[in-house]
View 1 (cartoon, rainbow, N blue to C red):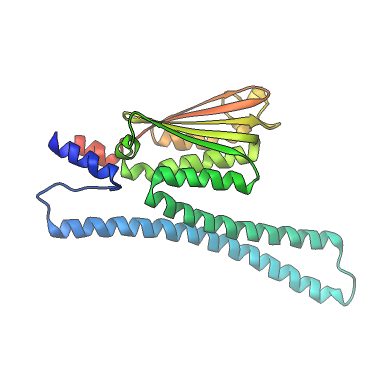
View 2 (cartoon, rainbow, N blue to C red):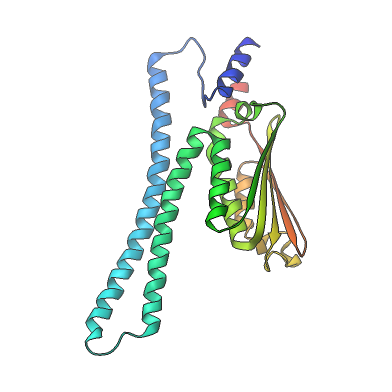
Length: 253
């Protein structure tokens, strides 16, 4: 009981992993290096995706500009061509902005998953000029950080990220995201006003009209469940996700 209490207190103070004594110095160094390399890999992946997407878009912009300049002496540039170029420029700017946001999001959740999620929710909705609310319920102050396994921080972040992205595409008005941590489960709930596609009751069983099929698969990979409630004006997405990660499962076994 004493060891478990020490682990709980350490997690509450901000730790995201632990080892037990006696420990081998070489194993400790290897574990720390593995953690650092994992975080570096995640950041490189986010920046790499941005680099590839942005590079392709900039190549298209350069090619279109060269064609316009070549043909400008012979005939005026047509409006559709300018509109197409402007659209590609806007897409490139969005790709750059999203890539920087993704890298920043990873830094936020590394520092503190729950505070990071709060900031990400507020920032994303504000960017689209939509109001949002964020709430956290836990059995006692500090228990959420102690209960959520460190190796589940990124999967939980990706679930919330996709949930928000879908709502920004299909929902309207104010959105409310709530997290409830209870024992070995994290309950995530999103309440939002329905857009035109969300009001299609034929999509209720699968959530296809809300773009939820991919999210449902992601939640299922984490042994969780997703349920959808919707009507002509509002919809709610309920996700239940286990918060005992592989590290704790192995320790318990």
